[in-house]
Length: 214
Image (tube, one colour):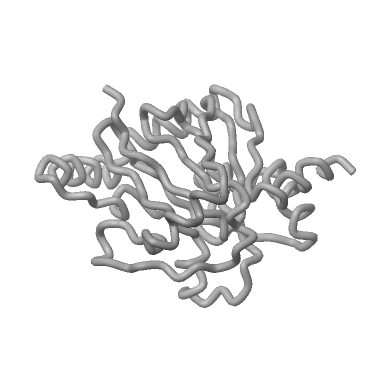
């Protein structure tokens, strides 16, 4: 089957990188909308101010865009056939887009502690962990600018209790438990080119460092 090897990696490691799923023109269109959107510009200005005060508003770097079934460019990008075909094969089921969001991680922005997306989505009424996250690299992702990092194979541990804080700074796995997990599983920095995509299971532990690029 076309996606058999990719499916094996997804379930063995908890993630899959698909290079060059989007072309440069498509990424230019997305980036142009992001940098010129009034709401995102306002959010970014507020984030810069909070970071300058020593705060870590991780959750606020995520701009939720919930028009998943509309005709806007973000809805169309996330409904791409090459995304749906793969995930339907991986999960052996029909799928839908739960929500869209844009990470406003400009230079100086803070990262996220290790967490599982399903830790949040379970509390939102999703009973089963038959879910995945698809991250599209609108800009190149590097260690310097705080790319995604993953604990390979961590999805096999199931849903882990998270420590929740004030709803502004991020939440994550208890540090004592995480310290043990990190001795067992390899940490992978997911560096991507513009237009690459990474898909990862909803129970895969992932996070990111701060953006230290200029």
